[in-house]
Length: 185
Image (cartoon, rainbow, N blue to C red; front, side, top):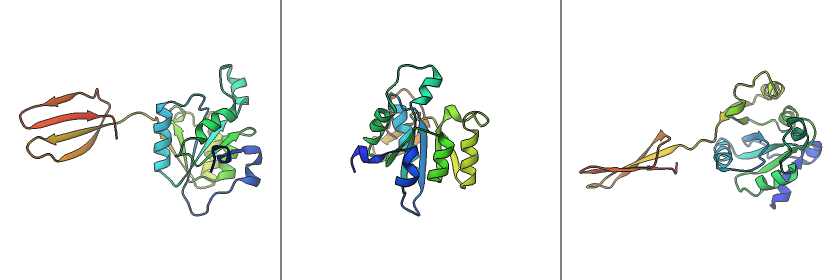
């Protein structure tokens, strides 16, 4: 499927958008003006939670209300996301909002950035209500990097990993062990 074929508009989604039945659908949401490593980690985490990853991209009108004049058009932002292999579909919110997208797609999970976690009464109130109506759940994820600590015994080179949070990536050794922080989870 070409990237263009992975993009739908909310105004046409009800007639053109169909998801395979019985598959865990995960919906993500945001502007995605410039895709950065945090976005990639956020999307990878979301994809790990289900079978189909759909990303709802805020429409161009959301920028006129925000006062931010430096942005790519919604279709350009959607195309950038559609090029990512982990993304199965991109929904441009050209009319309506996330609540309407939730009603149309009926996702099993809505994965939101941590910046939305305290916004249960603001702009997401109706979206969370719509999600509850379709028996979906919300997950918050920051897209932060976790580190993997690899410990290798020099005499017996078995490696095992433990997630330890953020670290500087330094190498420490003593007589029998080498400890190395790695940024690859």
